Length: 316
Image 1 (spheres, rainbow, N blue to C red):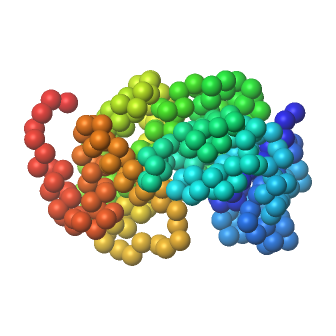
Image 2: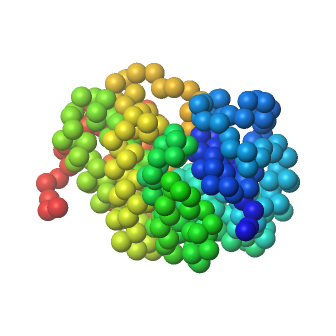
Protein backbone atom coordinates (compact mmCIF):
# COMPACT_ATOMS: atom_id res chain seq x y z
CA UNK A 1 0.00 0.00 0.00
CA UNK A 2 1.28 3.48 -0.86
CA UNK A 3 2.43 5.70 1.98
CA UNK A 4 0.47 8.81 2.93
CA UNK A 5 1.59 12.13 4.39
CA UNK A 6 -0.51 15.12 5.33
CA UNK A 7 1.12 18.53 5.15
CA UNK A 8 -0.51 20.91 7.61
CA UNK A 9 -1.67 20.15 11.14
CA UNK A 10 -4.68 22.42 11.24
CA UNK A 11 -8.03 21.00 12.28
CA UNK A 12 -8.89 19.48 8.90
CA UNK A 13 -5.47 17.99 8.20
CA UNK A 14 -5.39 16.52 11.69
CA UNK A 15 -8.87 15.06 11.31
CA UNK A 16 -7.96 13.39 8.01
CA UNK A 17 -4.81 11.96 9.58
CA UNK A 18 -6.81 10.55 12.51
CA UNK A 19 -9.44 8.98 10.25
CA UNK A 20 -6.86 7.38 7.93
CA UNK A 21 -4.69 6.12 10.80
CA UNK A 22 -7.69 4.81 12.74
CA UNK A 23 -8.27 2.43 9.82
CA UNK A 24 -4.73 1.11 10.20
CA UNK A 25 -2.94 3.10 7.51
CA UNK A 26 0.56 4.35 8.19
CA UNK A 27 0.17 8.14 8.10
CA UNK A 28 2.66 10.95 8.66
CA UNK A 29 1.33 14.34 9.78
CA UNK A 30 3.69 17.26 9.21
CA UNK A 31 3.62 20.37 11.39
CA UNK A 32 6.13 23.19 11.66
CA UNK A 33 6.41 22.55 15.40
CA UNK A 34 5.00 19.17 16.43
CA UNK A 35 6.44 19.37 19.96
CA UNK A 36 3.22 19.62 21.98
CA UNK A 37 1.42 17.11 19.78
CA UNK A 38 4.29 14.65 20.10
CA UNK A 39 4.11 14.92 23.89
CA UNK A 40 0.33 14.71 24.25
CA UNK A 41 -0.53 12.61 21.13
CA UNK A 42 -3.32 15.10 20.51
CA UNK A 43 -3.72 18.41 18.66
CA UNK A 44 -4.78 20.37 21.71
CA UNK A 45 -4.65 23.69 19.88
CA UNK A 46 -6.60 22.96 16.68
CA UNK A 47 -8.60 19.79 17.40
CA UNK A 48 -8.66 19.01 21.12
CA UNK A 49 -10.19 15.86 22.54
CA UNK A 50 -9.14 13.40 19.82
CA UNK A 51 -6.22 11.08 20.59
CA UNK A 52 -3.86 10.10 17.79
CA UNK A 53 -3.99 6.43 16.71
CA UNK A 54 -0.75 4.46 17.03
CA UNK A 55 -0.15 4.40 13.27
CA UNK A 56 -0.13 8.21 13.05
CA UNK A 57 3.43 9.56 13.07
CA UNK A 58 4.41 13.20 13.51
CA UNK A 59 7.14 14.97 11.56
CA UNK A 60 8.63 18.43 11.89
CA UNK A 61 11.05 17.69 9.05
CA UNK A 62 9.39 18.34 5.69
CA UNK A 63 11.81 16.04 3.84
CA UNK A 64 10.65 13.12 5.98
CA UNK A 65 6.98 13.81 5.24
CA UNK A 66 7.69 14.28 1.53
CA UNK A 67 8.96 10.71 1.18
CA UNK A 68 5.36 9.48 0.96
CA UNK A 69 3.90 8.52 -2.40
CA UNK A 70 0.66 10.44 -1.83
CA UNK A 71 0.71 13.80 -0.06
CA UNK A 72 -2.39 15.64 1.11
CA UNK A 73 -1.90 19.41 1.19
CA UNK A 74 -3.97 20.72 4.10
CA UNK A 75 -2.55 24.24 4.24
CA UNK A 76 -4.46 27.52 3.76
CA UNK A 77 -5.24 28.33 0.14
CA UNK A 78 -3.55 31.72 0.17
CA UNK A 79 -0.30 30.13 1.39
CA UNK A 80 -0.28 27.15 -0.99
CA UNK A 81 1.38 28.78 -3.99
CA UNK A 82 4.31 30.19 -2.04
CA UNK A 83 4.75 26.97 -0.07
CA UNK A 84 4.99 24.88 -3.24
CA UNK A 85 7.22 27.44 -4.94
CA UNK A 86 9.71 27.22 -2.07
CA UNK A 87 9.51 23.45 -1.60
CA UNK A 88 8.86 22.36 -5.20
CA UNK A 89 11.92 20.10 -5.41
CA UNK A 90 10.46 17.80 -2.74
CA UNK A 91 7.16 17.21 -4.52
CA UNK A 92 7.85 16.97 -8.26
CA UNK A 93 7.21 13.23 -8.64
CA UNK A 94 4.44 12.94 -6.05
CA UNK A 95 0.67 12.75 -6.12
CA UNK A 96 -0.46 15.99 -4.47
CA UNK A 97 -4.04 16.10 -3.18
CA UNK A 98 -5.23 19.61 -2.35
CA UNK A 99 -7.54 19.72 0.67
CA UNK A 100 -7.87 23.51 0.79
CA UNK A 101 -10.84 25.41 -0.64
CA UNK A 102 -10.36 28.68 -2.44
CA UNK A 103 -8.90 30.67 -5.30
CA UNK A 104 -5.47 32.27 -4.98
CA UNK A 105 -5.97 36.03 -4.77
CA UNK A 106 -2.66 36.92 -6.44
CA UNK A 107 -2.75 34.56 -9.42
CA UNK A 108 -6.44 33.69 -9.72
CA UNK A 109 -5.49 30.00 -9.81
CA UNK A 110 -7.34 27.17 -8.11
CA UNK A 111 -5.42 24.50 -6.16
CA UNK A 112 -5.01 22.01 -9.02
CA UNK A 113 -3.71 24.75 -11.32
CA UNK A 114 -1.28 25.91 -8.63
CA UNK A 115 0.05 22.36 -8.28
CA UNK A 116 0.53 22.11 -12.06
CA UNK A 117 2.24 25.51 -12.20
CA UNK A 118 4.58 25.12 -9.22
CA UNK A 119 5.21 21.35 -9.48
CA UNK A 120 4.75 20.46 -13.16
CA UNK A 121 5.98 16.87 -12.68
CA UNK A 122 3.56 16.15 -9.81
CA UNK A 123 0.13 14.59 -10.26
CA UNK A 124 -2.63 16.93 -8.96
CA UNK A 125 -5.88 15.94 -7.27
CA UNK A 126 -8.56 17.81 -5.31
CA UNK A 127 -10.48 16.65 -2.23
CA UNK A 128 -13.56 18.69 -1.38
CA UNK A 129 -17.09 18.45 -0.08
CA UNK A 130 -19.32 19.02 2.97
CA UNK A 131 -17.22 18.27 6.03
CA UNK A 132 -16.29 19.59 9.44
CA UNK A 133 -13.03 18.47 11.01
CA UNK A 134 -14.63 17.63 14.35
CA UNK A 135 -17.13 15.29 12.66
CA UNK A 136 -14.39 13.46 10.74
CA UNK A 137 -12.23 13.09 13.85
CA UNK A 138 -15.23 11.80 15.82
CA UNK A 139 -15.78 9.06 13.25
CA UNK A 140 -19.07 10.47 12.01
CA UNK A 141 -20.09 9.61 8.43
CA UNK A 142 -18.84 12.09 5.85
CA UNK A 143 -19.03 12.02 2.04
CA UNK A 144 -16.55 13.94 -0.11
CA UNK A 145 -15.58 14.27 -3.76
CA UNK A 146 -12.12 13.30 -4.97
CA UNK A 147 -11.21 14.74 -8.38
CA UNK A 148 -8.23 13.71 -10.47
CA UNK A 149 -7.38 12.66 -14.01
CA UNK A 150 -7.50 9.05 -12.76
CA UNK A 151 -9.25 9.19 -9.38
CA UNK A 152 -10.10 5.52 -8.80
CA UNK A 153 -6.81 4.36 -7.20
CA UNK A 154 -6.84 7.36 -4.85
CA UNK A 155 -10.52 6.82 -4.10
CA UNK A 156 -9.78 3.37 -2.68
CA UNK A 157 -6.62 4.50 -0.93
CA UNK A 158 -8.13 7.49 0.88
CA UNK A 159 -11.61 6.23 1.73
CA UNK A 160 -12.02 5.21 5.37
CA UNK A 161 -14.68 3.61 7.54
CA UNK A 162 -16.31 7.03 8.05
CA UNK A 163 -15.19 8.94 4.92
CA UNK A 164 -16.89 7.85 1.71
CA UNK A 165 -15.26 9.29 -1.40
CA UNK A 166 -17.04 9.79 -4.70
CA UNK A 167 -14.76 10.22 -7.70
CA UNK A 168 -14.77 12.84 -10.44
CA UNK A 169 -12.47 13.89 -13.26
CA UNK A 170 -13.74 17.50 -13.17
CA UNK A 171 -11.07 19.11 -11.01
CA UNK A 172 -12.12 22.63 -12.06
CA UNK A 173 -15.74 22.11 -11.02
CA UNK A 174 -14.82 20.48 -7.72
CA UNK A 175 -12.38 23.20 -6.69
CA UNK A 176 -14.69 26.05 -7.73
CA UNK A 177 -17.60 24.56 -5.80
CA UNK A 178 -15.45 24.29 -2.70
CA UNK A 179 -14.11 27.81 -3.16
CA UNK A 180 -17.27 29.76 -3.91
CA UNK A 181 -19.46 28.16 -1.26
CA UNK A 182 -17.29 29.99 1.29
CA UNK A 183 -18.14 33.33 -0.31
CA UNK A 184 -21.87 32.60 -0.24
CA UNK A 185 -21.53 31.40 3.38
CA UNK A 186 -20.16 34.81 4.36
CA UNK A 187 -23.18 36.46 2.73
CA UNK A 188 -25.55 34.09 4.54
CA UNK A 189 -23.84 34.79 7.85
CA UNK A 190 -24.27 38.52 7.25
CA UNK A 191 -27.98 38.01 6.54
CA UNK A 192 -28.57 36.04 9.74
CA UNK A 193 -26.35 38.35 11.80
CA UNK A 194 -28.24 41.40 10.53
CA UNK A 195 -31.56 39.83 11.50
CA UNK A 196 -32.87 39.35 7.95
CA UNK A 197 -34.19 35.87 8.72
CA UNK A 198 -34.15 32.36 7.33
CA UNK A 199 -36.03 33.25 4.16
CA UNK A 200 -33.30 35.70 3.22
CA UNK A 201 -30.68 33.03 3.83
CA UNK A 202 -32.55 30.59 1.58
CA UNK A 203 -32.71 33.23 -1.16
CA UNK A 204 -28.98 33.94 -0.87
CA UNK A 205 -28.14 30.24 -1.00
CA UNK A 206 -30.28 29.77 -4.11
CA UNK A 207 -29.00 32.81 -5.98
CA UNK A 208 -25.49 32.08 -4.73
CA UNK A 209 -25.71 28.60 -6.20
CA UNK A 210 -26.63 30.20 -9.54
CA UNK A 211 -23.51 32.40 -9.24
CA UNK A 212 -21.37 29.36 -8.52
CA UNK A 213 -22.66 27.66 -11.65
CA UNK A 214 -22.14 30.72 -13.88
CA UNK A 215 -18.56 31.16 -12.76
CA UNK A 216 -17.74 27.45 -12.86
CA UNK A 217 -19.05 27.02 -16.40
CA UNK A 218 -17.11 30.11 -17.53
CA UNK A 219 -13.98 28.21 -16.43
CA UNK A 220 -14.95 25.02 -18.25
CA UNK A 221 -16.54 23.04 -15.41
CA UNK A 222 -19.41 20.63 -15.93
CA UNK A 223 -22.71 21.87 -14.44
CA UNK A 224 -23.47 18.47 -12.90
CA UNK A 225 -20.36 18.76 -10.74
CA UNK A 226 -21.80 21.77 -8.93
CA UNK A 227 -24.97 19.77 -8.21
CA UNK A 228 -22.88 17.27 -6.25
CA UNK A 229 -21.13 17.12 -2.90
CA UNK A 230 -18.43 19.67 -3.70
CA UNK A 231 -21.00 22.25 -4.85
CA UNK A 232 -24.56 22.03 -3.58
CA UNK A 233 -23.62 19.71 -0.71
CA UNK A 234 -20.85 21.89 0.66
CA UNK A 235 -22.92 25.05 0.11
CA UNK A 236 -25.75 23.63 2.22
CA UNK A 237 -23.50 22.68 5.12
CA UNK A 238 -21.37 25.81 5.14
CA UNK A 239 -24.28 28.26 4.93
CA UNK A 240 -26.29 26.71 7.75
CA UNK A 241 -23.89 25.99 10.60
CA UNK A 242 -21.92 28.13 13.01
CA UNK A 243 -19.20 25.45 12.86
CA UNK A 244 -18.36 27.07 9.52
CA UNK A 245 -15.65 29.70 9.95
CA UNK A 246 -16.89 31.59 6.89
CA UNK A 247 -20.50 31.64 8.06
CA UNK A 248 -19.42 32.69 11.57
CA UNK A 249 -17.27 35.44 10.09
CA UNK A 250 -20.28 36.74 8.13
CA UNK A 251 -22.40 36.45 11.27
CA UNK A 252 -19.98 38.77 13.09
CA UNK A 253 -20.01 41.22 10.17
CA UNK A 254 -23.81 41.24 10.15
CA UNK A 255 -23.94 41.90 13.88
CA UNK A 256 -21.18 44.50 13.55
CA UNK A 257 -19.33 42.54 16.21
CA UNK A 258 -15.57 42.01 16.55
CA UNK A 259 -14.15 39.33 14.29
CA UNK A 260 -11.90 36.69 15.89
CA UNK A 261 -8.27 37.18 14.93
CA UNK A 262 -5.98 34.37 13.79
CA UNK A 263 -8.70 32.30 12.13
CA UNK A 264 -8.34 31.29 8.49
CA UNK A 265 -11.33 32.67 6.55
CA UNK A 266 -10.79 31.32 3.05
CA UNK A 267 -13.86 33.12 1.66
CA UNK A 268 -12.28 36.56 2.04
CA UNK A 269 -9.37 36.00 -0.33
CA UNK A 270 -11.49 33.87 -2.63
CA UNK A 271 -14.15 36.58 -2.92
CA UNK A 272 -11.53 39.08 -4.08
CA UNK A 273 -9.99 36.63 -6.54
CA UNK A 274 -13.36 35.63 -8.01
CA UNK A 275 -14.52 39.25 -8.19
CA UNK A 276 -11.59 40.19 -10.43
CA UNK A 277 -11.77 37.02 -12.52
CA UNK A 278 -15.53 37.40 -13.05
CA UNK A 279 -15.18 41.03 -14.11
CA UNK A 280 -12.51 40.04 -16.62
CA UNK A 281 -14.70 37.23 -18.00
CA UNK A 282 -17.88 39.32 -18.01
CA UNK A 283 -19.67 37.01 -15.53
CA UNK A 284 -22.31 38.63 -13.32
CA UNK A 285 -21.62 37.92 -9.61
CA UNK A 286 -23.72 40.33 -7.49
CA UNK A 287 -23.46 38.44 -4.19
CA UNK A 288 -19.71 38.01 -4.55
CA UNK A 289 -19.35 41.70 -5.39
CA UNK A 290 -21.23 42.69 -2.24
CA UNK A 291 -19.16 40.34 -0.08
CA UNK A 292 -15.96 41.91 -1.44
CA UNK A 293 -17.28 45.39 -0.68
CA UNK A 294 -18.19 44.33 2.88
CA UNK A 295 -14.87 42.58 3.50
CA UNK A 296 -12.98 45.62 2.20
CA UNK A 297 -15.04 47.93 4.39
CA UNK A 298 -16.36 49.87 1.38
CA UNK A 299 -20.04 49.49 2.33
CA UNK A 300 -22.06 49.04 5.49
CA UNK A 301 -24.29 46.04 6.09
CA UNK A 302 -27.33 48.28 5.58
CA UNK A 303 -25.97 49.51 2.24
CA UNK A 304 -25.15 45.95 1.17
CA UNK A 305 -28.69 44.75 1.88
CA UNK A 306 -30.19 47.70 0.05
CA UNK A 307 -27.94 47.08 -2.95
CA UNK A 308 -29.10 43.47 -3.24
CA UNK A 309 -32.78 44.32 -2.75
CA UNK A 310 -32.67 47.11 -5.33
CA UNK A 311 -31.39 44.91 -8.15
CA UNK A 312 -33.57 44.93 -11.30
CA UNK A 313 -36.59 42.64 -11.37
CA UNK A 314 -36.09 39.81 -13.87
CA UNK A 315 -36.86 36.20 -14.71
CA UNK A 316 -35.35 33.49 -12.55
